[in-house]
Amino acid sequence: MNIPRLALIQSLINKNHFTNYLEIGVSIGTVFFRIKCQNKIAVDPDFGFDKFKILTRTLRLNNFSNLSARYFQKTSDDFFKEDAKKTMKAKLDISLVDGMHEYSYALKDIQNTLEYLSGDGIIIVHDCNPAKAENACTYEEWGKRGYTGEWNGDVWKAIVYLRSMRSDLGVFVADTDYGLGIITKKPFDNYTPLPFRSFEEIKAVGFTEFDKNRKEWLNLKPASYLNEYFGLNLQLS
Image (cartoon, rainbow, N blue to C red):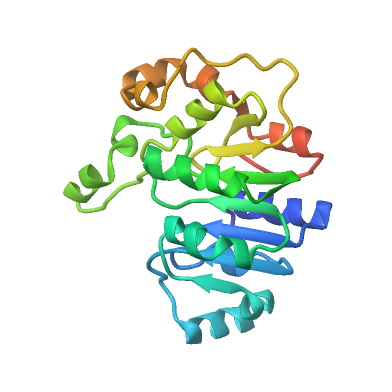
C-alpha cells in the first residue's frame, strides 16, 4: 500500500527510535493499524472498527502494537481536555493530524498536540494542499455533494496561520499525498512571517487567492525535500 504519510511516519519512527505516536482522525485505521511503534494512541469520534477488527488486523499485519495501543472514541477536543495529561505521561515523538478538515478544528488539533510534543518531535498534517476549489470546500458543502470526491477542506489555513504567527516553529508542506504539512519545534533560520495578523483575517481568505500564492504561503516543497530535511531515503511522488 503506497501511502506517503504512512511511509514517512514509519521511516521517522525507525530512524529516530521514536516510541510515542498519536493519531487524530483514525477512521477505519488505514494508517494507524500499520504503524509499528511502542506506544500508540488513536483518537476519533467514530471509529470504523471494533475490538474484533483490531484483533484480526493485528494478526493479518503482524503488528502487535495495536493490541497495546490506547483507543479513544471521542472528539479530539474532549481527548485533550479529559485524557491527554494522564495518558501521555511521556512527550510525544510524532503525531498525524488528520481529523476534521476545517481550519478551526485542524488548528486546535495542532496547537493541542504541540503542548505535548517533545523538542525533537514532529507533527504531520494531512490534506494541506487542495488542488481544486471543490476539494477545499466546507464539510457542509461536501455533504451536499453526497460526500463524493476528494475532500481536503481548508486545513491549508492552519498552515498559513502558523507561518504567520509562530516564529518558534519550522513549518512547510511537502507536495505529496494531498499536501503533508510538517511542523517541528526547530524554526528555519530564514523565517519571514506571512502578512496576516489574525485568525479571522486568514479565515476570510478564499481559494482563488490561496491558489495564486500557495507556494509561498505553504512554504511548498517537492516531495523529495522530505528526504533532504529528515535524512531519509524514501521513494515519494
